[in-house]
Amino acid sequence: MPAFPSLATGDSPATCAVTDLGERFASVREHSLNLAAPLSDEDQCIQSMPDASPTKWHLAHTSWFLEAVVLVPHLYGYVEFDPRFAHLFNSYYESLGPRHPRPQRGLLTRPSLAQVHAYREHVDAAVQRLLAQPGTCDWETAASLLELAVNHEQQHQELMLTDILHTFSCNPLLPAYQPLEEPLLRLAAASAPLRWIGMPGGVVEVGSDASGFAFDNEAPRHALLLEPYRLADRLVTCGDYAQFIADGGYERASLWLSDGWAAVQAGGWKHPAYWLAAGDSRAPADHWQVFGLHGVRPLDPQTPVSQLSFYEAAAYAEWAGARLPTEFEWETAFGAPGITQMTGQLWQWTRSSYGPYPGFRPFAGAVGEYNGKFMVGQMVLRGGSAATTEGHTRATYRNFFPPAARWQFSGLRLAQDATC
Ligand SMILES: [Fe+2]
Image (cartoon, rainbow, N blue to C red):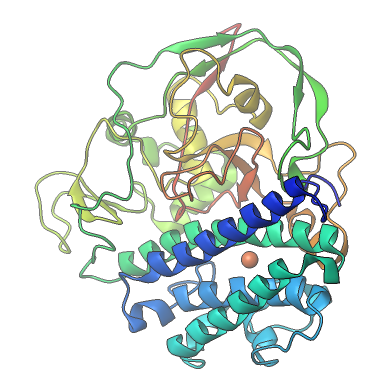
């Protein structure tokens, strides 16, 4: 299994590694509960669309993943909390058995939230037993899978936020997940006009070098050729995007990819998903407003525009006389002088289809289904958002969503050919 840190038992560094993994595991598990804390039991059960899962399901599914991938195969004598839960909380692992239909996760009023919390405690206690006796199993493999499970739960932590935000966006009351006094999203306002940062191109290396944890889709590291290009020093802002709307951006087919224009027509898109036009009856005002985790707020023209689909990002770039960067241009520019907002603000759509790197090999075993089987029909996003758990992403990280998805913390950064 590639790309995981090597852990061996029997010496001091290995003991430190086990302790570190155990502490990170406990911290991540606690963080999931903290994210759910502002929500009522009713909030945590509802499913607003097939792509968005209930909070309670996320809390249970991450526990099932630990149970199915780490505990059942590697903790001797482990007894499942409830064997029926595998059917309810398996997401998409064909090799791990049949599943409850994804669009019907919101129907699972049972088990109760209290039972799901008890499930989490049962799993957490078992993981601590595993960590206390690494010599009783194939620890190298178990530790690798536990590291994967920690990163998996971090991914679901962001989904808990994006999914509840979509749920709340469907409620005419437009409730706030969190009061503004406790800022969760720290989107940095752009303070200066956009500047272009020149990049020389040439033969570059991209992908994980296997020096730390990485998902299988980030490897192997490999070389490729980039033409010279320019990258915007910052993300596109709400003020930038408002100009696109005012210029008829959603009414000009020539700006859109064919599938994107079809999505505009079918969905009646006139602005980003969570923008409220002046006069919207849900929160009357005479100006643009934006709904987010802090509720409805006046549009701030300096903050990055979010919750965009790939189609909207590509249309904006076309209107702006630019294009989206490829994922490899983005990765190569990471850390370049003058580049800002590469991570911690918004995921950034790229012009790259999600596919395997040359020599890609999925993880061994059931977790081979984690990434590889989704490598068709989706676009890569790079960076990481303010809703991404701190420390979860890196320069080589490849997020991916279908091009019409517009409920994630997704925005864009412009690119140009150097010859423009
Ligand atoms: Fe998952």
